[in-house]
Length: 238
Length: 238
DNA sequence: GTCTATATAATGATAGAC
DNA sequence: GTCTATCATTATATAGAC
Image 1 (spheres, rainbow over the protein chains, first blue to last red):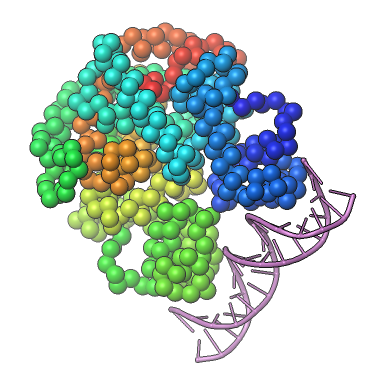
Image 2 (tube, protein in one colour):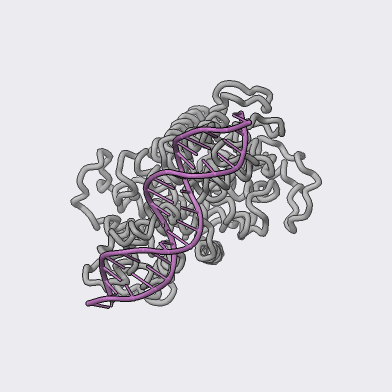
C-alpha cells in the first residue's frame, strides 16, 4: 500500500493531493489550482509534472490499481503477487484515517465506469466466481443454480460498503465507515450469507416457476416482454 | 412517474435535459450550454427559468424525489401515497429506455450524498427495517440478531443494482440493466436470501465468537482497536 | 524543478432587445 | 418567454525567468 510517510517526492505529493481531492469531490469539480494549493506548489508545476489534468488522473488510477493488484504491497509483509480487492480493503479499513482517500477514489473509479474501473470490477467478479467454485467443491458453499450470475451478485454485494460508505456510517451513527461499524456489520451480513433472510422458499419457488423458460441465456430479443410477474422484484426484501 | 410525452413546457424540457446530462456525466461535468443545446434553447433561457445551475439541480432532485415518494405517480394507476423506491425502480426497469435518465440520476443522488440523497437512503433503511420486522412477525423471515443493522445491509444490497447498473450489465453481456438481465439476477439473489451461500455456519460462528463483547452498541471509543481477528472480512465471500 | 506571468478558452450569469 | 451579445470569472495550459 501507499506509504503514509511524509518524505515524498514533489511529484508524489502532487499525485496524492490530486487523489484526495478527486476522491472527495470528483474529477470535474476539482481544479488544478486546488490540487496545487493542497500540495503547496504552483499550478504550473502540476502540469509540468503530469502534462495535463487528465494524465494526472491516469496516474492516480494507476496508484490505486497498483495497490489493489498488490504490485507494491510493502507494508502488508509483502504478501506478494495477487492480493485482491477484498484483502486491500481489509487493510484500508483497519486504518481508515490514512486510507480514506484511496477508499473514496476507488469508489469513484468504480462508479464512473472508466476503463480502469471496469477492469477492476471484471477482475473482482472473476475472482469471486473462482472463490465460489472452490467453496462449492470443498463443500463449504451451496451449489448456486447459476455460478456466474451468483458471482456477479456476490461481488456487487462485496463492494457495497465501499460505495455506500458514508450513508452506512451516517445511518449507523458514525462518521463514514469506522472499524467499529464494520464489526457491527459483520454478523448480520454473515447471517444472511449463512441462513438467508427468508424463513422458507416460497419467494424463491415462485420466482423459479415464474421465470421458467422465460430466461434466454443467450440474451435474445425478449418478445415475451411483460410475461413475467411484475412482482418479481430484483431487490426482493425492500 | 414523469411523462414520456413530447408536449412538455419549455421549462420541463430544460429540466429533463438537465436530468439526463447530470445523470450521464455528473453535475460538474455538465455545462449550462450543453443543457441548453439538448433542450434546443439558449443558455440564457436556462438561467432565466431556474435562476442558477444549482437551482436547476435542485429542481431535478425534486422530480426524482416526487417520483419515488409517489406524489405524482399517475401512470402506475395512481397507486397513491407511499410508493417506495423499490416499487418505483421496478416500474423503471420495465421500461429502461424511457427511465434510464431517472435511474442514472438517482444513482448519482445517492452516491453524491447530498441532502436529498441522504433523505432517500434514510427513508429506504427505515422502510426496510419495518418490512423485515413485519416479515419476522409473520414468520416469513428469520429473526436477525440485529434488526437495524440487518436493515442497513439489506437496503444497501437493494440499491446495488442501481449503483452498479452498467458494470453488471456489461459483465453479463448486456447494455446496462435490461429486463432480461434483471430476470437472470432474480433467482441467484433469492437463493442467497433463502438458503444463504455458506453450507454451514462455521464462518458465522467464528465471527460471533471473535466479536463477542468487542462490539459496543453505543459506539464508544474503540480502545480495543486491533483486538479482533483481521480476517473477519466485512464482505466475506470475496 | 519551480516559480510568476500570461495566453486562451470556457464557464455561469447578466443586460437588454424583441 | 426567448433571444443575442456580453460580462466577469475561472479553467487548463504555456512561456520563459531563475
